[in-house]
Length: 455
Image (cartoon, rainbow, N blue to C red; front, side):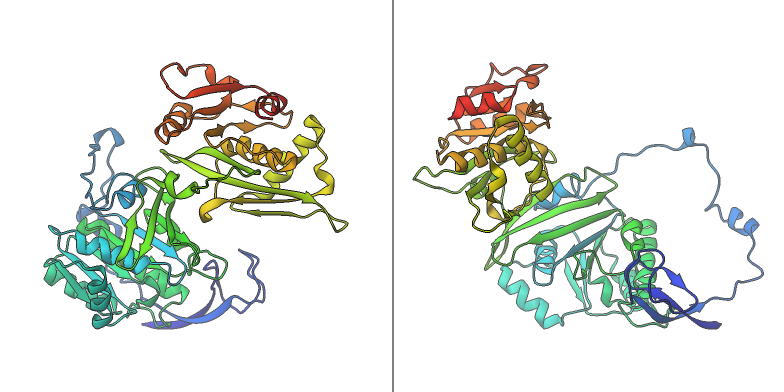
């Protein structure tokens, strides 16, 4: 056994023989840490012929491989099923990252306790058994098929797995595990890489799904080498603001489904409650008509949602006008202001502009453009937009309203929530039948058309 040490970048996992100030891979400074690595001496008697005889690495023609549709394991949590692409795939490795205290452990403990007919092993490397029991009591859920193991050594975990034969494994968290084959400390790059590889081999060979809960760094990325995210099948991000009760489970990578899906939860005293109709929480129940508020019909994956856009336009006191946004892209706002300045003749260049997407959500759908533009105009003119009007359209640089995808689902969601009118792009008329809706659909082609219709 030959022991040697190497230097690893704690940000991206780049390996170097000597210490370097700047990582040549990710250009970060002072991220190299020395770690002991243990290399196995290659066994001389193992040759490629033996591998072939074992039947593991036989070459097959692609046409001979049978495509089997995986039977997914459905959890009682509709939001989690949606985000995973329709349920848990057997043998899949799912990595979940999020801020400390956001509710990652609560979410998976809650789901494991609610899976009554499945043997689940919950491996806790951070909390003692009594701490996990206290949390389970707070969630008011019991399950006879739920087993708990407080251990960080991977070989001990696999021995216990052989005895129990669980159908689902939850690891909380991957940064606390350590493999006896690597000498460095838990949480280091080489330990995370090795323990994740061991979990991956176990999941693929046993067809047992494994959830890995992961820590994140101060810039919001999952701690450890980037290779961790490449190894797993699905990466989920659990996010939310400490000041809001709402939490969002977002897909970043998914080999078994769409990456645009979104699940919304509300943190309560007895755990996380699924929010099946997010439009109701994202639109404030206001009685008075206020200027600078517009409702956008947006899509997150396959899910239509109505969100409230709030804008405030005021006379600039200082020399340079301010542009402040929450939940929206700042450059996109500057682009829309330039369109209004050039195509509409509105002088936003001397005004401070503040924009907020209500509810603490971050919107990336281009169809929100039209609502942002109308909220800006409403605040600029100080004229309120009627309560029962919403918008769905992308704004182009020449001031045209461009068509957006899945327009019929957006209109149906607006109609379901009791809106009277929806402004959409004129170019969405092709291939869409607006006559079947009870809501009044107003097709518009240019920004000045919207302005004349509204104000």
